Amino acid sequence: MRREQVEQLVSQLAGDICAGLGLMLVDCTYRKSDRAWRILVRIDRVTGVSIDDCAEVSRQLDARLDEMDPIEHQYTLEVSSAGLSGLLKTDTDYQRFIGRPVELELNRPGKGARGRKSAATDAEVVVGKLLGLTPHCLTIENDQGAVEVPRQQVRRARPAVDFRGGGVTG
Image (cartoon, rainbow, N blue to C red; front, side, top):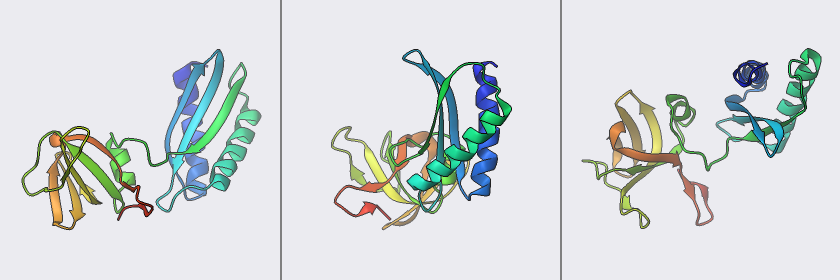
């Protein structure tokens, strides 16, 4: 099987398994790294993913792949949480974070989206709960109320984390 076919098959299998466990499949990649093939499956859930969740998806997916035996060479299967460090890039990424805190780094300050300045980039940063999205706008709720941020102004978006010891902000 070609790499794209493996990714498509594993995504379908992992997606079905995740749906049965109340999880979301974030992505699936099949790559060669250091002369070894690796399937990496990333999963998520609004309430977070545990090690047991990753182990259960791995166990079920491994059993299905062993049963089907579609990959002709050795590979390593890894199932992990999407985590909090990943950037939000696609509509699917944003959809996963509706109702959860996000941090938006803007290309330039937006009207009505007053936030703090990022020391590293001197860019405007808006933090708040993601309420919704359209093709042109993200709606964030913060201490200013509901704020609409044009998507073309978003330089970088990521889950918001409070590094002062409070965990995820919100």
